[in-house]
Image 1 (cartoon, rainbow, N blue to C red):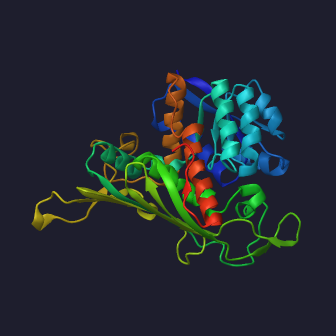
Image 2: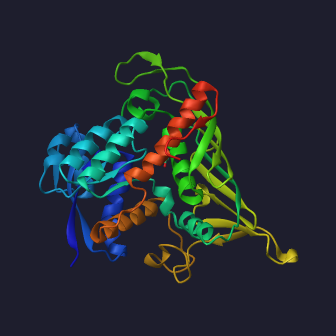
Image 3: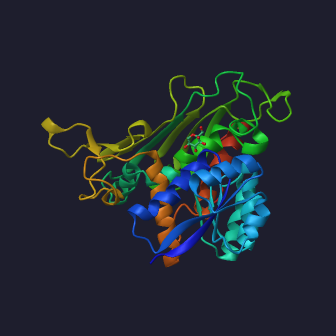
Length: 382
Ligand code: SOE
């Protein structure tokens, strides 16, 4: 019988739901040494957190995260609150000896991230950051293909994350759904929120980024703040584009915006190597595009691999349905929990750890610094 692993969830928003769903489902599909138990849900808004706890089956409600972190009936703390709260909670949770699962990005900036890494490493607690897209089977398969050397020398890594939900100047900053537009809560705009996903995947696929040159823009300069009711300057980046060099000699090209009319969550990447290329698109997430120059000339062209064959070599798919039946966005979180629990039981960290996520944070910081200075910037630690 799998041992209980008691979760204390802080936050009840979009990510609170995505993670709770993963804890509920994982044991039904994966054979694991640990079984997540939804022990407590925590937030300040009593009415909302009670409704959340009831819906997902959390055993109890806690209104103060400090109490949750100290609770002896909790094994792991899941941080699903705005970015400015990540560090304080993580430091306290590490001190209390809890395992920590933290929503992305790791922190407001690398200085905070460094403190978080030091705290979890000193305490020796399992830790992971929810960069979930690594666990989309097609993205995991891309990693396997790259590691097998099938692309040959890599020349280009290109990634975009495009949305369009903040074009209207009427969208406020601050508050429950829109804290991502408030620099005091988010730390940055699309760089930390969206490009961080692209960077995490890129570092995993293609190794470290050494130098960056970036451009950011804030198209809507003032927005009403939900908490103060006043129109205030906007401190986040609405759009960010950067080029970079990877340590392996390849060039990177990244773009992210919330002003690409018509695009809701268009996360795409394409990697071009000497022998072959691969491409992926979140809107068609179960497919991996593959072009192999070594194919016979007459038949050479882009293949579209339907990454659903668990009987074949498609990551995670043996846990789900029969070949050809696809899975979706929420399954990436289920896979991440499965890997985390396996790691906790075997004392083997599941990536991305806080330290891995700090590498992403260093790139984000260098990107923002470059946009400010107008110069190429070096990435710390690379
Ligand atoms: C922003 O709209 C957002 O929800 C991000 O915060 C998530 O990390 C991303 O996966 C989807 O878009």
